[in-house]
Image (cartoon, rainbow, N blue to C red; front, top):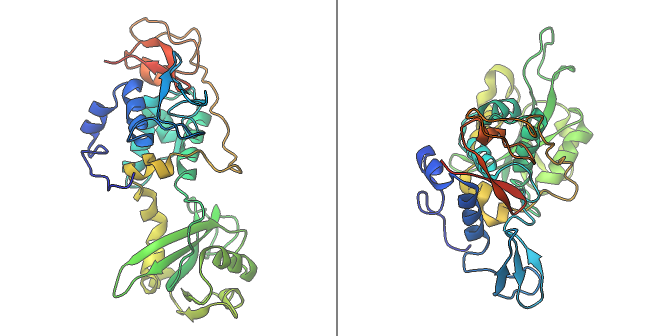
Length: 324
């Protein structure tokens, strides 16, 4: 899709618009079809423009007989979770300023299991990484931090026992501001680990701005122009303002149009360890608040507890839910 996307026209700009646009699975499928084939159906095998619609929601190419669906090759492929739940998860993931945890997503959408909520968020995070992206260049601030909360009894910014050590690299723009950011987990704060972080994310010859941690010297030797700022950590973190603002700011920097754009709608990478969402315990035999029987496959609880009865039929590998 070459044209620029506009809020309110190509993606919802408020919660009210979101609820009006995507009240049923059919609405979600229509939106995905528009994103995938804005000019009409195109066969993924032969690029033919004519196809027959099948009863299961798929399309069969008139030329080569290839069968495909709107959700094929995306994070929504073969999922048992209704698309309305997926889209709501995307909205919360993109609009929450401080991000959203799997437990919060499970509670807000009333998803049957924590594992399903975790797998959904993991898939969303995976597709935000653009394959083959270029490395950072120019002036780059680099630092490392622990993510996951403080632990009592441990002093020092690099004390062992804390959660996850993450390396952060941010482009510094002139005269002010910052550009792209890269984050990656580190085994430790040694020179070898930091050098691997730089080689993967920063172009050689760039000016690397760090605090006074000694491991940055061997990490940047012969490949980068190192500019250490002694005292740039701890209480005087203002010397590296860009890199210190990222661990919190990045959690809310995603946008709805990034999550559902054609470039981001692909499945996770082949090496992504995403488990297939497990069906919830609130499946067969469950009943809605209005006394209606729940669906027989997957977990319709996020929709049923709101008084929506599931209707028969499948679209793109997902059971559809009835409208209001």
